[in-house]
Image 1 (tube, rainbow, N blue to C red):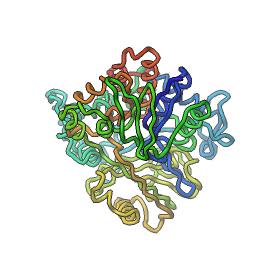
Image 2 (image 1 turned 90 degrees about the vertical axis):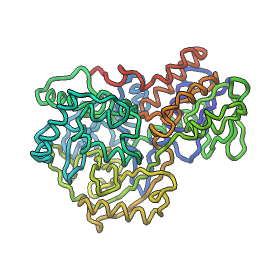
Image 3 (image 1 turned 180 degrees about the vertical axis):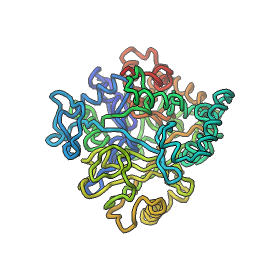
Image 4 (image 1 turned 135 degrees about the vertical axis):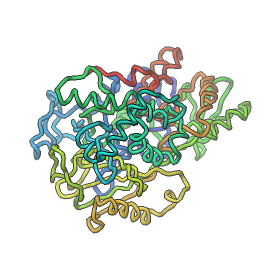
Length: 514
């Protein structure tokens, strides 16, 4: 029996193993550096409350990925506990599981994301609505309108992420709603970031499309195509995304696959144009016929036992930059923010899934409200609110090195400053740190093709996932990379380029039939 060594137990690595077991006779062995299943899509449990590391909407334009998700966890067929309390009406699946009786269920959730700026809420993505005009004020609205018209008439050459945003929204709106948040996220100004990040994350979105969708919804006109950032509903596992990947891991082990946690790969042995084995930090050696890697490209290159590799490849790989991520989970009695929308929520808390914090006087990047992702994420969701405060940093910098206690105090103080909570209402807290959460589009990224071409020389090496391709993929893109990899392996290695084409094709970016 042939063996596939898979590095990483995130969505990409797990999907590769799952598909290999379904479609081939190849035995997968997953080596995960940490003790957690799910990578950055893991769910962390703290004192009965569950924390989603990134806020993962289960929605994809790819039918294969949607089918895989619902194959593992069927869509709810009856109301969840908050649906019952609120009398919500949803398009429940026929014969789907009851969330009150079953854990293995996808919930149907309403999506609302907003921007906090000028201590007011704005739509995300930004749109020209009455609320936007009211919160911006007459002068800002006038300047934004002029800026947008100017951007439509005089397009910039897109050399940077700043150019990308300005071309779609105009400079004033870019400055208000994108510039500072992007610098918080990456630690560098958007003018120093390649435009590729916008092409992969914001894709076809623009102010024109946002307004167009708003008008269509107002007039009840159904779109044939919808931009991913504009969807109103999504699926979500009852107990967070980690629940789905933990279930996938159990199924992999049940049918013959193996998963080794705390197994960091440190050395990769090559022979000619093929990988022959990998060795973990504790000295264990794993040989196989296929090697599927979702480990960071920089680490992958440094682990390859290739004395013939030229210095140029080493310099580019070691110049690739990553951004770290921290979440502070806070359990609070309530939020000071009022729900001024028409959306009903339990105890009338704000209905947002997450809030982008554009305010310039805090380091906080984004807030998640876990009650709104799933009521089952919060042990006492009727009487408490569990929120996640997201910060972006570099490993070893001032924020990263702070103790958990000191950093949590800092985060609480920022929420108090924003008048979101009272300090005395904090009941519990936890900090989670994630290394190399975001592959960056600066440093030596512009020369990344040199590294990619080098890695493609190895016939039995397949790079997948966000860090495996140094590409800011969504969860579904990472899974689709794995699905394509299994197809290529089944076809004897033909059309290997298709793995790298995931999340790079314009049609995939912008279109979905509804």
